[in-house]
Length: 207
Image (cartoon, rainbow, N blue to C red; front, side):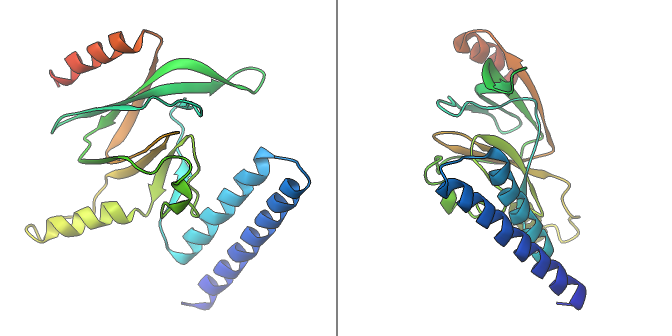
C-alpha cells in the first residue's frame, strides 16, 4: 500500500465514523433522517473503493421495489431472463407511490441468484456494509462474481478477455435477486399480473 492509498483509506474511515455518529445520534433522539442513512452508505462505498474492494451503488431504472410486498418473480430460459416486481416511484409530494409492476429485461444474462436473504437477513450479505440497502436496485462495482466467471472460463479458454458483463442486485422485502448481464431494460405495466406474465412468457419463448 502506497502513501496515497493509505491517506485515502484514512480519510474514508473518518468519513464513515462521522456518518455513523450522525446517524446514531439522530436515532437516539428519536429522529429518522433518510439523508443520514444515505450518508452512511456513501461513506461505506468510499471506504470500499479506497481499499480496492467491490461495492454496490444505486442503479436507477426508474422504479424501485415496493417495500411492504415486492411480489418478485423471475422468468428465465437458457438464453434470456425477465424479472418482475411490484414497483413504486416518488410522487410530486416526495412520497413513494405504487405504479404497477416493473418489468425488467436482463440483456444477455449469463447467471442469476434468487431467494435468500430477505430484508431482515440482508445485513449479513457481503455487500451490506459496502453500500447495499434494502428496497432498491444496485450495480456492483469491481464485482468478484464477474471476475470469478472470467477466471473460470480461462480454465478452458486461456485467452478469455476481461468481462464487460455487469453485476446487478435487486433488494426486495422477502428476497434478493442478483444477476450478471450486459444490461437491463425496465418498463412498467399497469395490467393485472396474470396478463403481464402471460405476455412476458409468450415473448420469452420467442426470443
